[in-house]
Length: 92
Image 1 (cartoon, helix red, strand yellow):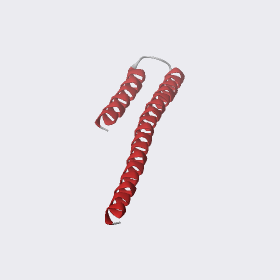
Image 2 (image 1 turned 180 degrees about the horizontal axis):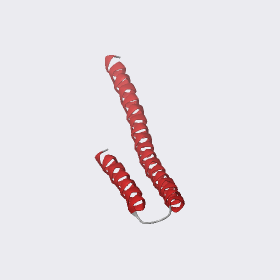
Image 3 (image 1 turned 45 degrees about the vertical axis):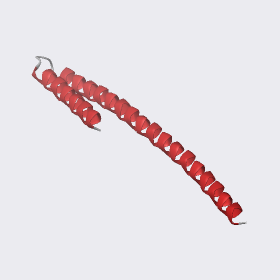
Image 4 (image 1 turned 180 degrees about the vertical axis):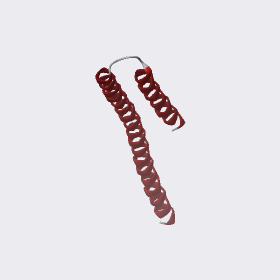
């Protein structure tokens, strides 16, 4: 979680820095606006990719934990059943 916050902070800083750099560069207003729009689009696309990567990572970890839980539940159920059978046989 800490890494994702750091990554988002860095990307936000890069986007703000690029925007300020363009604003203070000597160029026509129309060119500056086009550059800002392009940089914003690029930064947004990069952020979406990173967030999708993080979401996929969480999804994979969730599914892994879920599968391990199912295996553990089945194993426990099998052991409980086996223990009950042993106890029943012991009393007979």
